[in-house]
Amino acid sequence: MSGITLTAVQTTTLQSLSNASNLFATTQNELNTGKKVNSAADDAVAYFRSKSLYDRSSTITTDKANIDQSIQSVQAALTATSAVDGLLKQLKSVLEGAKGATTASRTSATVQFKNIAQQLGQLIKDASYQGLNLLNGTSAALTTQFSERTAATLTVNGFNYVSTGAGNANSLFTGATTVFKKDGTINFGALVGTTSTTGAGTIVGFSQLSLSSQTGGSTSGIAASVAAAIFTASDNRLDAAISQNSALTAALGTNVNILQARSNFSAAYSATLSGGGDKLTLADLNLEAANSQALSLRQQIGIQSLSVTGTQNSSILTLLR
Image (cartoon, rainbow, N blue to C red; front, side, top):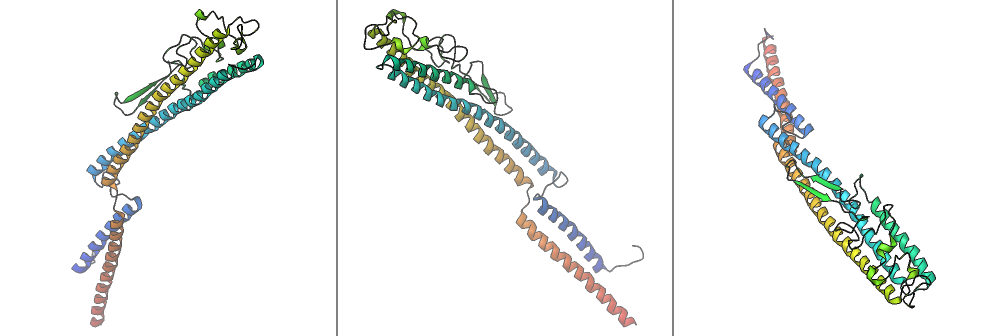
């Protein structure tokens, strides 16, 4: 304000108080936000370098979320293959039990066998995750992008466990044709049967297969030796299906391991990038707290100094009176 003259000491003290006030405001902002760089105005180089790291970290985190969903898709298929293994072993158990039983027991075993096989087919068709079923068709495929690089992808191809055509490497029963019907039910004769050289016709139930008589059931006309061959062939098909399921499960498990490794890497990589950004922008709260106390003390001293100066001027005025 013009017309008012301050001493050099007062002017210096006021400037010191102004600087301390500005520094105190900056320190309080850093304490409140936890950052020493909040905008490009604070430190343009550190701000833009940290922004690049944070943006990259965010992209990696998004990619990780997609990877984790892919893991769940494959895990859903693995859960199903575990259940398939149990049902195949139940089929094998029923088959073994039907060998030496009475006709009535073999008839009951046929019903059990068909029911288990039908549940097997339905279970496979239900093994989907967000609309994708990796066990119900070779056209199904899961492609996961690990990063923005085109080559950083993994494709998990589906299997056709319930193939209704000829057996193939992606089918559960590779050595038999049309084991499953289109509705998911079992084609009993395709699974429980043997080659035409045995002289056996289409098998519709275990009641036709007796190991204790020459003709088996009353109308089957199947000799005990042929029935034994049919049981052996059927048993071998189930063993092959169990082995096939184990092989395909291992393939899926390998893919899960790859996906999990990429997910773990993405998590660690994202944390590293964020940590780099933090080192450029985060404030040392211990240091800032100490600065805040020091600046508060400086302000108090400055105010006290002005007070002392004012008191001195008052004393001079008293003497002049």
